Length: 232
Image 1 (spheres, helix red, strand yellow):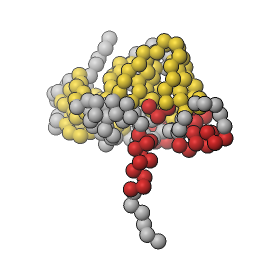
Image 2 (cartoon, one colour):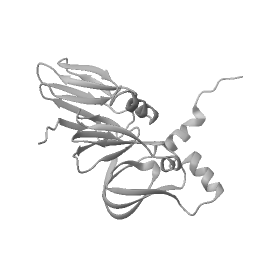
Image 3 (cartoon, rainbow, N blue to C red):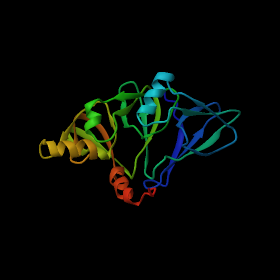
Image 4 (cartoon, rainbow, N blue to C red):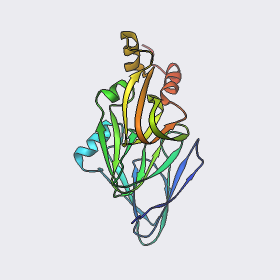
C-alpha cells in the first residue's frame, strides 16, 4: 500500500523547486540546507542518516553528514525545498523490486522508509572524472533527486552510451561500464582521469536512465580564471 507524499515541482527545468504538502503526522527527510521555507506546524530535527558509519559514507560521497527530518505535528503543513544548483527535480517511487543509483550530489528528499547508502564504485567512479561514490536508494517510498540543467528520462532496452558528466540517475536493473572514446592511450588516460574528457558510460539491459542537459564541470573550468587570487 502506497503512502505517498503530496508534492509539486515548480519553475522546472531551469530553477526547479520542490513543494511538499505533508499530512498530519507525516514525515519527510530532506538534504541539509535545502529547506527554503515551511509552515510553523512543521517540526525539524537533524540526524545522521543510517547511523554514524553510513553518515560518514555520505559525507565522503559528496553529501552532507546530516539530514533534516520534518514532521507535520498538530495538522498538515507545507515545505519548500530548493536544491543547491540551478536545474531540475525529478520524482521516483521506490519499491522492493528495483533500486535507484543517483549521482552523489543528486539527493533532495525522500520518505523515511527509504534507505540511502553511499555505494563505493572503485575504478568505475575514478575513471568517470567525477566522484568515487554513487548513492543507492532502496526500500519503498518517495524519492526526489535533482540535476544541473533539465532532466531527460531515457528508457533503455539494449545498449546505450552517455557521457559520464551528464548522468543523473539510473535503475539498478541496468549494467554499466566506463569506456574511453577513440581507444586508450597514456595521453587520453591522463586527460580522462583528471579532466573527465572523452569518458562515456555504456549501459546495457532494460531500465530507465536520467541524464541532465548540462555538465557542471565545463562551467567550473570556465569560471576558474575569474577566481580572485592572493598577491604574493
